[in-house]
Amino acid sequence: MTSSFDVAVVGAGIVGLAHAWMAARRGLRVALFERHAAARGASVRNFGMIWPIGQSPGQRHDLARRSRELWDEIIAATGLWCRRRGSLHLAFREDEWTVMQEFCDRHGRECETRLLTPDRIREIAPAARTDGLRGGLYGRLEIGVSSPEALAAIPRWLHEQLDVQVMWSTPVRQVSASTVTAADGRTWSAERIVVAGGTELAALCPDSVRRLQLSHCRLQMLKTEPQPNGWDAGPLIAGGLSLQHYPAFSDCPGLPALKQRIQHETPELNRFGIHLLAAQNQHGEVILGDSHEYGETVSVFDRVEIDELILREARRMLNLPSFRITHRWHGEYMVFPDPACSIDRPEPGIVVAVAPGGAGMTLAFAEAEQFWQSDAAW
Ligand SMILES: Cc1cc2nc3c(=O)[nH]c(=O)nc-3n(C[C@H](O)[C@H](O)[C@H](O)COP(=O)(O)OP(=O)(O)OC[C@H]3O[C@@H](n4cnc5c(N)ncnc54)[C@H](O)[C@@H]3O)c2cc1C
Image 1 (cartoon, rainbow, N blue to C red):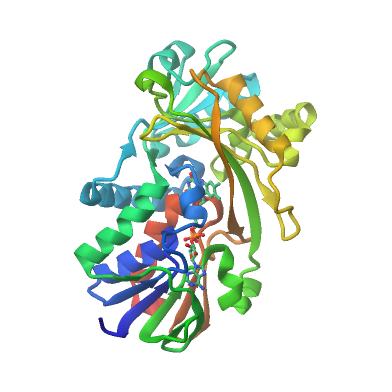
Image 2: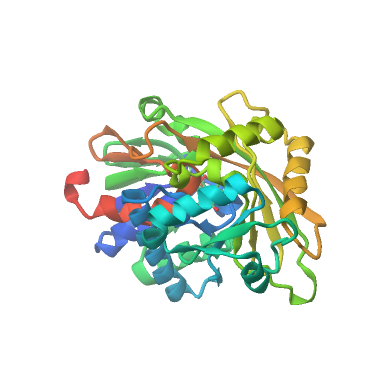
């Protein structure tokens, strides 16, 4: 194996894989370094939702759509499991229904969404409770993957098909112009280095963390046992709380009233940034989440209270045959003030690439593609 590469990528999360893929696609010789024996960061702890509907219509939505096409490509090439049933936001309250109608009026065509009646929801979404349901916003574009499976299969495929050299269990201690140094002192040379270290960026590139004003967001998640008898949940599901979470809905005139009502009725949900998402994986398990706690001083310990609130919301909106929880975990990603600014250049030949907050699975491929389309990016 050569110790000299065109490109070295540090971190085998989704951002690192995206950069390794796009660089190798251009015919460059790429090495990918991962601290652990397998990816263990945010990229394996998420819902696996490829979620264009969460992105602001326009440029961000287009980027998410492009990423989804790239996911289609990699799913076809690797044989990854994928849930292609779209997304469904459920409206149990009049103000939620109003925002969904406003969204559809404004962006329905571009975002490929339409409104569904409770009767139609009953037909396509066994996971949705329909008592008290006002209607739903269906999105055609959203897909679900199994993140742990994808994050294992993609590096294998990159190696087999594009000759990317993947160095597992290789913590990088230092990057400097043209050199990557591992914790054990081994060095590799590379003309271009991409650092995609997720929440651990500060160890390698502290100045970039300061410049991009990165801070942490911590999320709690739950997973049910496999649902019995091959029960199928239907689309990926979001509740009305998600309307105040995703920027896609921010220009809907009814949003301020909805936010006010949520804050008035259920401040405990806002306190922990809780909204309900549900995704069934290929084993029949349903992943439920999530919460959002921001800053550097958030407790490292999972809060039972948060899990209980997520489950309370899940039971209110979902009709799962089994709510027996078998797994609980948390994940973290970096957030920053300017979502369009996810790249920093600490020195010539080195680029720091940060996932766009809670949308790395949705946007990383297209963001990396855009980056590698131009040599000027370096
Ligand atoms: C609970 C949760 C749910 C989410 N759900 C979704 C979702 O459904 N859809 C969506 O689009 N996004 C979702 N996200 C966001 C998405 O998961 C993140 O944006 C994305 O995974 C971040 O990817 P990353 O590659 O930057 O970081 P990571 O996945 O954390 O990867 C960084 C990698 O770098 C390695 N590394 C760090 N330092 C070094 C070093 N010095 N040497 C070698 N290796 C190193 C780490 O070991 C790690 O494997 C969710 C996030 C969380 C936490």
